Length: 506
Ligand code: ADP
Image (cartoon, rainbow, N blue to C red):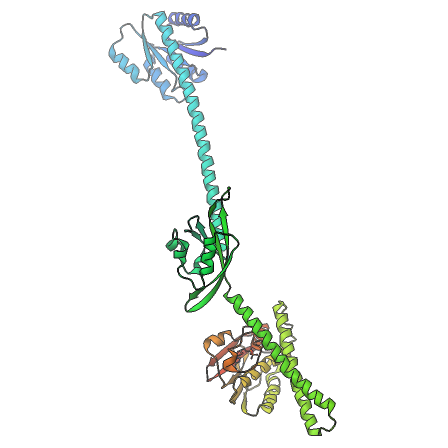
């Protein structure tokens, strides 16, 4: 196996023979390929990839210069070093053209054997160094390409990871604020911006105390930050559009691998609604206890009198029994409301037993009963002609009417007119109950159907649990209907709701 291969091209076979001998004698590690024309030389060079070429310039047909140019043009042989062999005392112009064609060296005839061998040796050494360099270069390029690929991949992965973190931060409903070791704001998610009323762009890099500004009851938060301790709970309020928002939060610390402090995370949530709900619930419990106790006391008192005294006149006895009966009805209604609400709360749909019922039959019984019970009020009933037939659960719609009528009476303590009206409204029947009572502000009317909601007791001074309308709304919606409240303080209120008509209704 030869270390290198040399291509010798000369149209003169004697020259070829001599040079081959010379190379084999002095460079035994070098193999020799020969060609007697430039065309043959080009073909061998392309096929065998020699390490160098000795090319005679003067050859018939394609000369050595042209062959050299073609070798340098082709990618496969572009790096092949070429020594041109020129005639004795070659003119400078030929040398210039030789260099122009890409030749690496010249040698002139008559050839000095030692010089030829020396030049070939140098050429092969340079060739070897060059090819090593090329190898290293291509290995380097491969490594660079590989590293570039890895870097690009790492960049994509880090971008994806960042997007993931961003998405998580955006989706977390709690507000998150991150500070660095110097207590400066470095990150805030959208929820925190919304809760704290500041934008990250405006406060990034500001000390957190400055970023948040003065906060009502904010001392706990500042102490938690100064303490640089995780798991500390704090509470503060924020005034927004004149209303206070209760905000609750907790600290966490960001520690490095050696336990050094890198910053803190503050998480916040708005607990205004929760606190309002728990306030309403406790108020409800005391109201419900009161609502239960009043009729129970009355039942207990009258039944005791009936049990212990024999001498009660028949008319009083009847009156006492009527009180007991009325108070029992109040208790039954209250317990029914509580049970309905707990069913609704548990996510159970109201079970309706719909059947055809004529509007006047349904409404009249409540109208008559209220007219008899509340003589201070003027009751009016106005129904469309012909009277429509409804497809409803009469018990449940009765419960709605009962609730609305009892509110109309309760919240018009001075008496006045209570009107029950009905009209056809886009293929449904709209029933309304209106009074001339204390009315509500738009804000109070907007909340009236929320469970446990009661307009401040001190102003209404009327007993109730705040459950009736929330049940009314559920019943109406279970019938596919819609409820409206029109109210004006000191002028009165009109509740109306729609119910389905029976398909064959007139
Ligand atoms: P309550 O048992 O307190 O009457 P409701 O759910 O029936 O509970 O009503 C909720 C609140 O809506 C009441 O506390 C009252 O403040 C207000 N409200 C209801 N009906 C009327 C009305 N006709 N006029 C004025 N305010 C009313």
